[in-house]
Image (cartoon, rainbow over all chains, first blue to last red; front, side, top):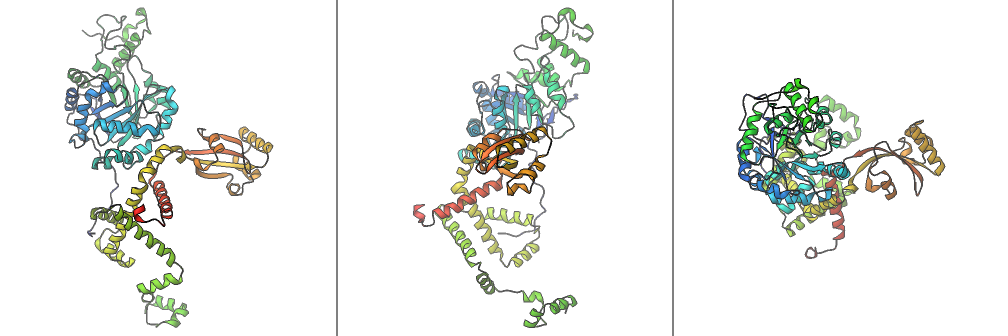
Length: 339
Length: 266
């Protein structure tokens, strides 16, 4: 053994691993990149989910345009997500020079107990040939699977960070790497809630780092049950991701029948802006299918947050989509017209 | 002579009688390796240390058998970490520390290597099974803080439960008034933080998934009727020190089991 003078010990904190973003849109009050809640992850405010079969070429295009948050499923609807697989293997696979520039979120919908996690993780590691996952999500959390979710969430501390019991198990099956050793196989835990009451219940859990909820102009309950319950100044608040921003079941970018003529019909990028204009929302997850959508979304974000008047109009627009008002009940002073 | 030392020497008359008055106490404490061995013999610690030395020898032989090795780099990392943690940053401080330990740099390196070999051996023999057992039996690692009151008859147990539910008396007060359990009586009924698996199955079943503050009662056990209160649930987590304890236990059992085995039979 060699003896040389040593420097004092500096607290061992995992470095910020997402590189300084290459793109910083201008003329916007939106911060295109933001810290994802209490995590150390810097994420683009628009994320790309693969559930609409986006191609790998277009996924790489999104990355080139500055999108760094990617959401992927290895079990439910894998046949849809798999078309972005090649891109994620290129960006996040072993030896990739881009890995630290990407925030990879994966989800499992099938695992119902901590015992079954290993199989799901192994599937994901074999599928994407990667070293680690940034955010591992429990998917589709509803009252029907609440007990299983609680049980699974109890394994958070065994999943997160380096040298976890699940990491050692995966290493024995999948071979380790320096990156895996350093980062662990999973950095943070997330949950995608379909029940907003459950999302509210788990908001302050130390076992949960990122919360994903459905939110759009027509379904705004998350604003009161989730977003409003968080303190935007609290560095320990969980990260918030919204999905179904452009509609669930209906196409919100299409005018509701009762909308007066010449009124503003929000585009998908406007609908992302609506979600991102809410307090504490970090990411609006998008289901783009082609690169034109990516360009439009980024251009939309560059317009910045909606004004209070615009937000009020969008609320009304959402209510009209839900048929909450008859044509004669529409308060004209809240309407915004676009030529 | 240092006046303080002079005082010490004066007060320790027995030492003074046996030694040259010109010799300092620090000089008196110089012990050769030979004397150290003698001390261990007559203080009855020789067998204990012999067992440790045998265990170390076994580790080395088993590592050779399983082709487990430790690199110089691994030793260096552990050595540097030790120096950082013990504020031995400068070479001179480390050399002084080695001197105080009466070992050379080479001895220290060998010691580190042996510890690493032992860790790797335990990992090789039991690591996978320990992790797999944990993943498959996580509930057994669930910890809970419990309080309890033990009484001999059912009616008293029911009365205590009613008092607790009505909030007329605290758990601690009732434990001090009624509990027949010597261990927890003095602590106002606090049983401690225990693994769920340490509890009798009927107690486990009764408390699992119950929220903090729940009164569980009365449960009949061998010694009487018990009233429990759940004070706190702890998240299940496989902390390193717990894992190391399990690996050590398995290693000790393995050694006993294979005491008379030949290497070729292992």
